[in-house]
Length: 460
Image (cartoon, rainbow, N blue to C red; front, side):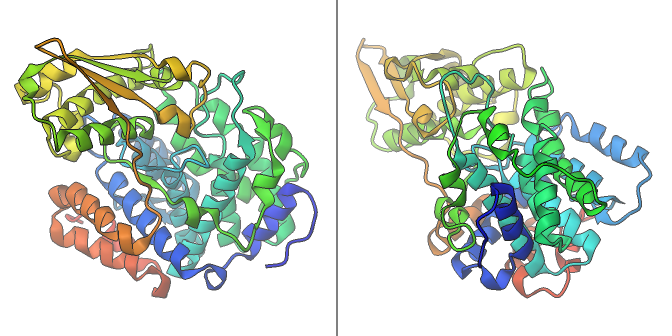
């Protein structure tokens, strides 16, 4: 794909406008299918009452607008505008904490890109191949912009959602078949909407962050399509709000090399963000060869970076308090060797007495080697868990990297197993299998009817 040397937003606009499934490597397409399948399970289990306190409010808001029924709200039989469908579906994806994580984008990416792409694809009457291409377009833009922002220690804003609007604007522009100039304007307008800053509202960051990112990019594309203009030289200023801007990370190989295919995604299997996954993974690996009973553990200390202690420590934000509880419970479950069911971390209190006892022992403290690590990054995941036993001995357990999904053949099994574990218990194995089949056949589907039908409640 030939890209002219103009501003960064114009380069991204050309990429976004011209991307089609035929120009995407097959291994990237297959990886996108796994990401779509994974986020669908997170969306469809979001009606769990303990996990999703905001979904009903978003549904009420969408219903009150009386919008033309062009797109389906996933998990329901309701139809509304693509912007409102993306708003509610994105909120469901994040609220149930069944979404994924992309390190280069530093955000829960599929939770916004898939709902926005599906809503716009349905409204535009596109085919399955178009949905996959738009999903990859949005993901690639977000990952490249995220990679272009280099964390610096003097930025105190948690960096998890600034790229959401850009990602969904890219998906929408692709599906609306905008020309490169209009697509660039859509990205410019999205950068001006400030999704990253709006996300920090106290006690409401989950309710606001992902739904806004899922819908604002569609509004930006719609405004650009109607002739609203924006500056095309604003990307560096946008990125520098959050860190040092490196345009080479944004432009290197754009149109030929897909970073999404290289970095993949981390499927979230616990009810908290991915920064603590290596801690849990390390404890699980250790537990397989441990020779002491859990009853001998009398103290648990988790040494982590200031970033993790900020995110997971008790704070005025209700969702962070819930996340802190979830972290302690997950550590206890890892130490007892318990398998993680999706609802394990939503049960208050956990029914197993030994899990409750160990959870109460967990303390988060500062890791001495990570005192400068205040931005979320791969380095912030380094932790050491120290177990104090009844005989006075101390066992130190290093974190173990939690592997991203990057290869279809290698990772297909664990993504589908997680999908069946989540959705099979809620909707039944046959319906879960029907969704898997619909996603696998997307690139050959003439329309989206089969997928949309499979994502409707079984009782409808």
